[in-house]
Structure formats: C-alpha cells, structure tokens
Image (cartoon, rainbow, N blue to C red; front, side, top):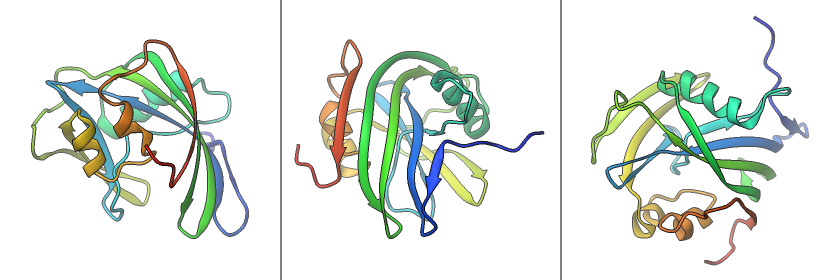
Length: 168
C-alpha cells in the first residue's frame, strides 16, 4: 500500500492549510454529524482529499473508511474558503460540501450515537440531529454558516468565504 498524500500544509507549528470534502446525509428530517471524542465541536462527515483524487472519490473513500458503507454522492452544495483558529494556529481550509445518500442499512436513531470508529489516533462518534437551524446552531458545528443554510439548501453550487467570528 502506498503512502497517503493528503492535501495539507504544515508550517512546523501546526496545520495551516487543508482541502476537506464533507457530505450532508439526511434521514427522517435529521442530519448525520460526527466528532472526534476529544473535541467539543461537531462537523459533517468527511475528510481530507488526497493528491490525484477527485472530491467525489474522497467522500466515497471517507464514508467507506469511517462508516463502512458505500455512499452515493449527489450535487455539490458549497465550495468554502474557511478561515479559523485551531490548536494554536490560524488555519485556511478549502472545503467542498456535497449532498450524499447512505444505504438504509446504516443505523438511524434520533437521540443516540449510532456509530463509532477509530480513525488513526482519533475515536469518532456519529449521530443524527434534527436538520434545523436551531439544532445545528446548538451543536457548535463549524463552519457556522451551516446552521443558517441547513433548512434552505442551494439548488446550484454556492461559493462562500467564511471567517470564524462572522455573524449570521
């Protein structure tokens, strides 16, 4: 197996740039989210792209690795230039956010953690949350524009430049 070639740059003090691809999966009015158990915030499932890999292939690979299922990738919703502070460093992330469908065999429960997996050094947990502005905003889920947009997904891709601290 060849070494992974993730699209990211480090400056010696921490990661300062990365390309991330994430998916929005919905079921029964709920959105699938996940977090590393050592973090307080939640994110959409996905991960870093690899050199030579399309963004759709990244998302398919990440869902297979993290959820053990074959996701069907839908339309691109947002391309996002995301600027934030994390782990002592100012970071710049280029993110692509797609609709995706998961097989019905993937578990659903409106209240509980539905899946756990070890991803490198991080333990990840997944849960479904109501796909409402209020519920997503209550999660602490960056980038924070997602709460504002979750009830009215764009019909065609939108480009967003987001800085932590931007207001709704």
